[in-house]
Length: 390
Length: 106
Image (cartoon, rainbow over all chains, first blue to last red; front, side, top):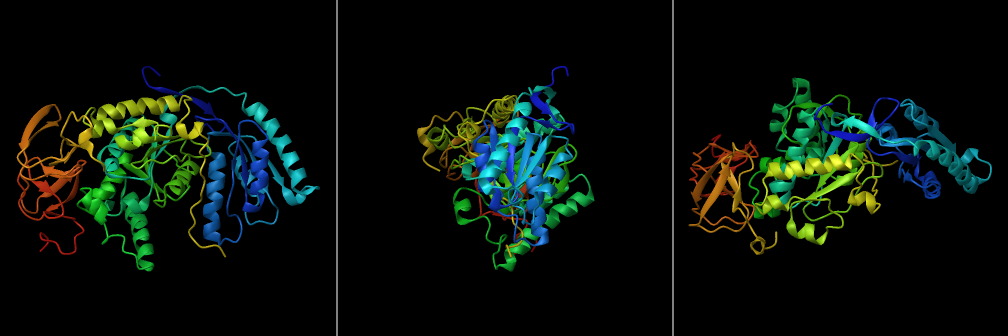
């Protein structure tokens, strides 16, 4: 591998590389969520994902939920999975478990209505199944793997003037560098691309990809318009203008710059599995946690998240690296923020210098260093909904 | 953004991409101040013609009416009138390419 950077990876049976080795318990419906949580609590090193939906959903919306659950479980940061169902729900435990099993990783299932003895018996059985899987899975050790197997999601939340000025350009430097080394980056939050469609379309790998960019951005504009909300004419907001942003293009660029400047290889649906290398756009809401979950379900094994005001959030299975360029936020929220990019705002470092420093931190995290959100146990999980529940 | 003048600033302004024709103030700058700016490996000195608040933009070279305003290496809008180097670049002299009442599309 010569002088190429390496990470410490868990190479899964399907060839994908994780940088964490989680033992996951997942509920298929909210009705089995407490059982899933209690099973996870009794096995050291286990993490629970609680599905708030799984029933009362129309088919297209159901597909999004199912794709998200299966994607989280298939993510190579997960070493083994226990699926917990109730029995009568729309998303059946067998269906999820069979799909995840295609990756070759160990998968078990329990269905509460099939167990004699109700939830106490289901929890007991679940703990035994999970404990056995954890014994094997947690014994695995990571190996040196080339950096190109990394899939990085980029996100922003609680933005302020320093986000577009420094933290997003610094993350953009890391995105470009990872892509140039053969890695993969996912840029999401479609509503924040409004006004920058043309800039993105010009960077598309093909006309089909360019058309898809216009299509997904236009869809959000029309959806808002159907509720009498104008997403274009109202931007930039008065607060943005006071902060120095003059046009909608400038505002959107301040957000999309975190994905860097390379060719856009494709546009993914929410939680769709990323196939191939380079830069991809995922069509997600701008709601940060929903967007992070979509990217991780799509295969991101690591997320870099910029913030201006400061936010503590993480993800159940992927490390989330928090970056701020606001010196006041960094000082106040050091306990939650992994990287200080305020050096750029203060003129102490250039974007490139801070970018190199962040790239090195990203490598450390991909070699096992825990992020603040991981250490403090922040594991927010929410799924995008495209149709109200019925 | 709170008062950034309490912090030690090494530089007054930043150019985010070498091809940009606007720079961003890293503190509240005053008309008449001269600002040193690194563009790639060279340094230029610009005398400010207007007050530039923190986070706001000023032109690093003259931008003709209807010329592109470039930040992040990308076009962020069009000049609604001639803009001189050192002048504040904002909603009063820049329009979006999506602008309905365009000065330039006429």
